[in-house]
Length: 310
Image (cartoon, rainbow, N blue to C red; front, side, top):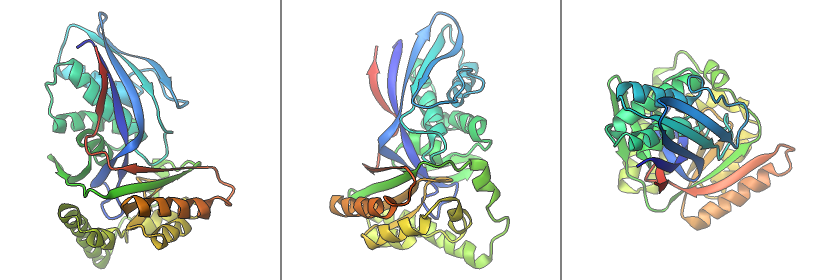
């Protein structure tokens, strides 16, 4: 294989109660990336479309950082040229840097002959996350690489559990066209939490995992509650409470902040409810004088997908 084109999915992280430890992959939107072997060694990023302000310097780009690390670990007699088309904007709360990082890990691994496991690819992708946002988190990149829902059970050592996805589970998400910087979203987090809140959060994570395994939508709905992070961050997102309340009134299992925002996600059971929730959110936000993107999606259970090889 000398060339590969891939689709790297957007991701929803935290999933309400699972701060930095849970995420899932989106089927509808993501990045397209190409990887081509070159005679000249090293890594070159020759084109980035769909987003502004991203560096072509591989040492300053999440995808480039990942590719360089992988070539350092697995020496070869060729180089790799990368192109990227960003299917959605950085700073959306939908794992933009994770798509670049996870996509790079997957694509480079294919050209190398697949020497690395999915867990090892996630470790490489975390280097891209650190370069992009300062923190080597795994929830977005883990979901992008493994697909479906993932639980980051441990960071040291890294341990990722892929969770089942109930057949009728779908997503509605709204991305208000404002920017919430990851650093700002982390700065507002509480440094201490009460034992009561911690216990509530642990129980909800356990409930969400149980609901996914048993396809118990009521348990999933009961568990999509965040008593720690969401209350601290929601003021960064205009009309968050309105969107969440309207989504749940329309039948959503639950709604919350995707990653560090500003995207708001809602999980739904079945296409009819998904359509109702989409319309409810659209109606709630249409007169707020804020541009927004609104989309629906099934859960992407595969992760990064191969589109073309040569």
